[in-house]
Length: 98
Image (cartoon, rainbow, N blue to C red; front, side, top):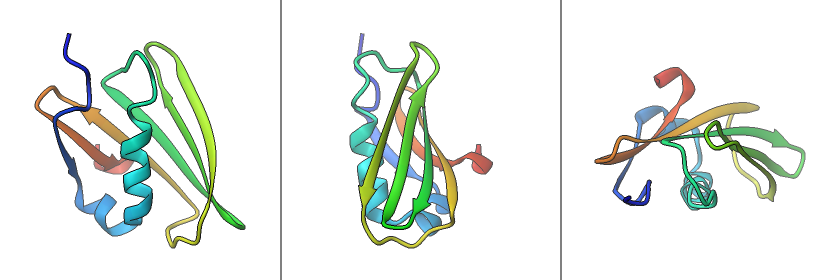
């Protein structure tokens, strides 16, 4: 079976406009962490006083990882981002763009 998220990677206009590039790159790195990957990866980003709290999860098999990144970035207080693998492309999009 082909490993997921190893195909052409795309971002939507919403991600481009609202998620800083360093965070986009970090999410792409984090998507490779689960040993068994679901086609849908979910990221909840929350701005903190000194950085960003990122909660990464998937449904099948269950997976959750939370990391805190110390950085100065500008984005809304909370964002939810999906990364979806459709076997030909991996697309990063905001939840409202789904």
